[in-house]
Image 1 (cartoon, rainbow, N blue to C red):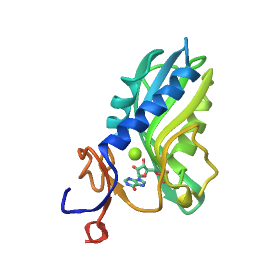
Image 2 (tube, rainbow, N blue to C red; image 1 turned 180 degrees about the vertical axis):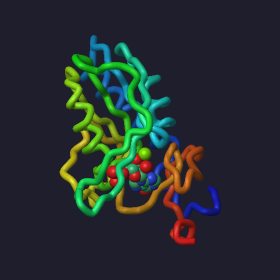
Image 3 (cartoon, rainbow, N blue to C red; image 1 turned 135 degrees about the horizontal axis):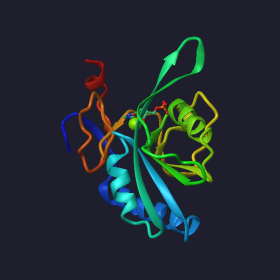
Length: 179
Ligand code: IMP
Ligand code: MG
């Protein structure tokens, strides 16, 4: 275990098992369909790569970079899209794949933006959900693990761009983000 990690919350075996379960649900829901799977970078890169390899319907890849910034005048924040999907999505099935749902601001805005482009369907699959931190009403369609309000890193998740490459998800020692 890395010295900056206080505790391993989810081992690589637990994550792999959950990815299998999520893929099973998705394979049932999307049987026979063509689906654009959208990885929201950078956090979802590892989850995305593991999950798509378990899917048996027709999968296309897209990548987005988006973040939401708090704004005192807009309670739900402002969405900034740094990299957009490369194609029109009207009439297509869209599956957004995210690492973690925290306040919900990013996905709330992102979903609204993508829905305005009139896809045939839009669903959100999140590996982790911290519902106690939610500031906007948002419910993902598929969730891996519901976790307590702790700052976690690894399996794609970072603090200051560090720790993304860990195979497990661990709780970061508070002194590491307070220093
Ligand atoms: P929100 O749902 O808009 O608050 O933001 C979600 C984003 O915040 C995620 O995509 C992560 O980049 C980041 N985030 C939230 N909680 C954590 C955490 O525990 N570890 C690492 N990143 C986090
Ligand atoms: Mg992220």
